[in-house]
Length: 267
Image (cartoon, rainbow, N blue to C red):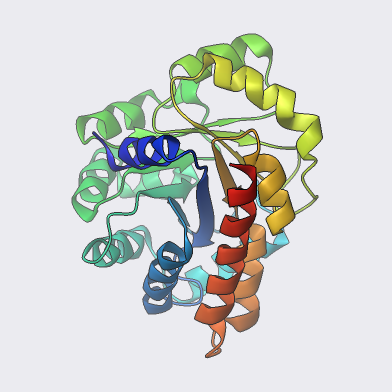
């Protein structure tokens, strides 16, 4: 059983919901990213989405774009991201899903990437700009190495496509709660609850909801119906503000703990 499946199954048996924080690898530097991941896990994170920095992150708002710029300026390459994962793996079995864009993976080489990612301890890959219908090559490579290709679903997707992609999903499904770029709006939980329920009815894997979740109340509201809650921009803002401060880890820990506490109210 994969780490992703095992984690979600354990959480389900306990009657809980998964917390999935996102951070950009290499922001503010590689060593701090390793410390941040361990801090996230200690504070209650169940799965980590680790962003692969890219120079043109078109689906991301200013906060995560700036994080990519900082990480690239610090010299964070795809190889460096895999080294971060390998270092984290020495101390934790938390599932790690790399999230980003296809261009860096393409230049690295899909087959080489899949092999190296598996060796480092990567559990899943989520590519924002590669539709599942066009992911055949990288998907085959990932399958050979036991890495899940996580699918994004948007609220604008037709019902027929949602049903088909949900039925074929691996790891978990990431349901985008709104149109637009990351960090641009607040989530409206009531408006998406029915849509998420329809996705869940087709999906053999858990459904995670992201975009617009910034507070413990948001996490509680979304956790009332989703299998997992993803938080990105709100966490990345804390890293931006306290990146080189002694307060960084404690600030991150407090934030993640508050989200987890909010979700426990919804479980």
